[in-house]
Image (cartoon, rainbow, N blue to C red; front, side, top):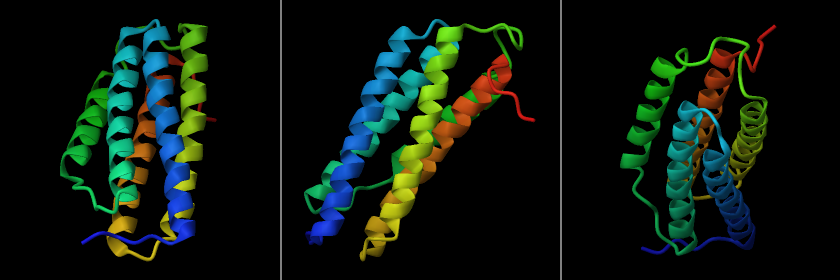
Length: 160
């Protein structure tokens, strides 16, 4: 069964498609620019997950509901790996300024993209589509959490 979207729903999916394309590109670019090996790995992992999000959006634009099983597991593994390895490496407060700029930009990007998903979720009629978008949004939030944890462990983000 092919899903028929309203013009507004199609427009929202196209917006999310552009956001995902941007995230894939930025994470890949920033993985190449990052100095810290841990950050390179984190950004590379997130770029791959963003590509899965883009694939899911493209499937929905084609009228199909994507299967979401594997993405969640990948996201959880990346989060667990980041949480366990985040305190290793450089001493707190001794970090590369360029890496910090990359992290700040990606954290801001994840906040924006997650918010855009939140708005989109409320605009779709189909419960299955809402669930897919909710799943993707949850992974975007996990990316933000992973970046936050990395930044905090390196002294880049001080919680007051």
